[in-house]
Image 1 (spheres, helix red, strand yellow):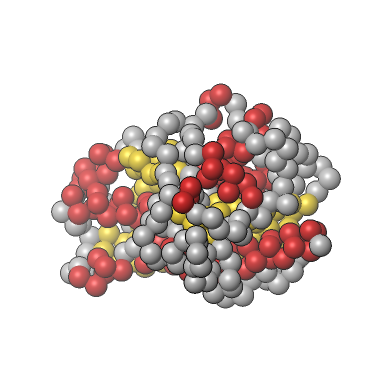
Image 2 (image 1 turned 60 degrees about the horizontal axis):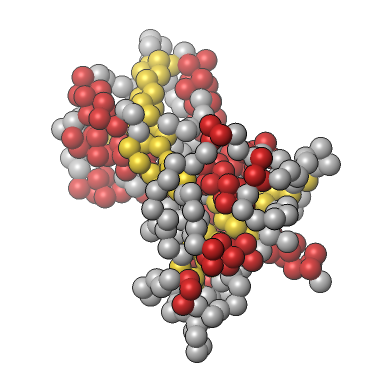
Length: 339
């Protein structure tokens, strides 16, 4: 059985122990109304991924390597074809360079990881507009919902001359992106609000108004992000300006040997609906792929359900800790079903 674990658009907030209806760790969606389909049919042609350079995979065993094994995590990566290692336990699929924390956390549980980036971030249609908008307009809030959105925003903010801004963030991972600026800045940037739960819809319902008059919000986002934040804020009377400052591009091809290793893993960890779609597109090359899913957050879990996947694990509170425990729960279920 192959299981999938996901991280939603930036659901990067580490939290305390998760509580769910299924178990302490994970919620499970498993409904007879969900039907498995041939994955080649998952995507209409309009969703076909754009090509870019195929990333190389890196295998991270959770113990000292023996003869023919890879170096431990943290050592320079090598091409997968060089490994004669056991099959990985989990495939981690965030953009290159962003899997280290998850890999390290899983290693503490003796879980072997295969790093296979599925998407990369590229400039969006409004990237170049951001500095001018920040210079020319005043906003009560800037809402930032992912580390990537934060990084792109900071570039535009610096290009605009570092105007005074007040930031609302979703997730501790997003907040940490601002740490360096907060330590060195003169106070022109303030991270002033985070919702009670690291979800965009919760931000939209909880963001405080600064006055009874019009409250203006700038929302720099992925071009592929949904509309629940701006719609939720608009419904509460906020004036929202959305800029699509970046987007994601899925991988089109993976080396057959890497794909074979990835398919052999009981768990696949996916960081967003975009990465999930990229994975399913790869699985269209594999016969009879009809396995289970474990996600970090509700956003990606909902996307998995809509795509027809049957068994979905995710923590009640988005974040790295809950994601790891959901992966472990998925591995446990896989082991039980295989015994």
